[in-house]
Length: 568
Image (cartoon, rainbow, N blue to C red):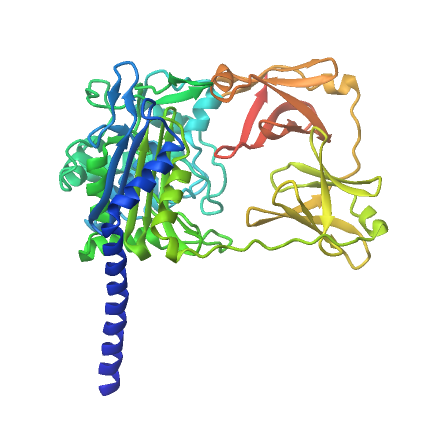
């Protein structure tokens, strides 16, 4: 019993010591509030001018507001200044509120995170696999992201778009990006479905549920879901983008879908939301713990760094729980540092990097806690030219893209589609690195001395790539045979392919030109029926049982994968 009591006493002393340290640090921040304000002003001044579109910055230490500051203009036409009551479209920062609503319904016993979503939304397509609410929350469902679906369907983001339009689009596209639980790919469509489930399990529309169960409870009197063109937009900032030296109005008020975005709020209310998350009450501590600690895994055993509307990451040795939010004209950042009882909120009505600015601010506040990561020094060594020649050839990445390696004029080159070349340097007999960008590759030598595999290392991931057969160049006539009319039936969009002057070109809908700056894509032959594009990744033509061309597939464009088109 004495041993147990001693252990408890030691534990309480350690907790007190930690808590006291946090309090001391917070008190220090508060005492230096004026100096901090000047430094934050200087950081913001690097990004905006007082007469330009700007934003707001809020900082909490515990539940104590450390800083609440506004900058710039909310409406250039009327020359109205931003203040703490100016309302912003917080875009994907809305996802944490949608996730909170789901967790509230779970706490009431009205749903289970492992429910099949078709229990709640039976009119969804009969997918080949079960998809759960948890899959939607953590972007592992395979449901396509609706922003990409709209782009590929040629549906303008400036035209009226209701939540029913959003739901109908999801229902019309039954193909999954991948088997649920197999991968993590961000999906706005998944969070739109979560809002539908909130309505079914909560017994009221999403906007009313959020107002009654969340915003009203926290005293967030200016926050609302923008789901109805009849809702007045009072004191709402206009969104701008910079073109040359000028700011151009770019924001649209025509999107009324919800769940993935479209919550509007001001700094006063977002500080109240932050105080709720950092509250010392038991239920709030439990909530913060859930959103701050990844727990679930993919089918291959990898842990997912996305919890309930938040990414969990580490920045210079400190835990960072965050989510960005961006739509044309608006950028937002919401960051929690749970081990330091710190929260940072940024909402801007221009397209600056709010994440970079938020990190700069945090590095001011937590300078004593940061651990600078010393990059590994890569030293180039001499290599055996005869061995390197055995590595020459093309290797196919998991997404279908091919990387080609050539040894020419005593130099080892990585050659990308389009003939962009980057020199490779050896750090071992089989491992090479690039100085042009941060990536490495390792060639796998079999016992017989053959080299049929290359591992590509980039962004913390390893990609197994297999050697492809020798290229067979296509004649002009064979290339011309791929030209024709192609369409995506579910998205009701046409993608003609033309052949002229020895080049195949894919024509894209007008949305690509409007939002991405291009309206056609050159197809560069890789091997067989595979072609590379600079804009849309790898494209592979498909054939029927008799060998006739019947369509093509785009392997991956980020949030949308294995997009299938038919030949008309």
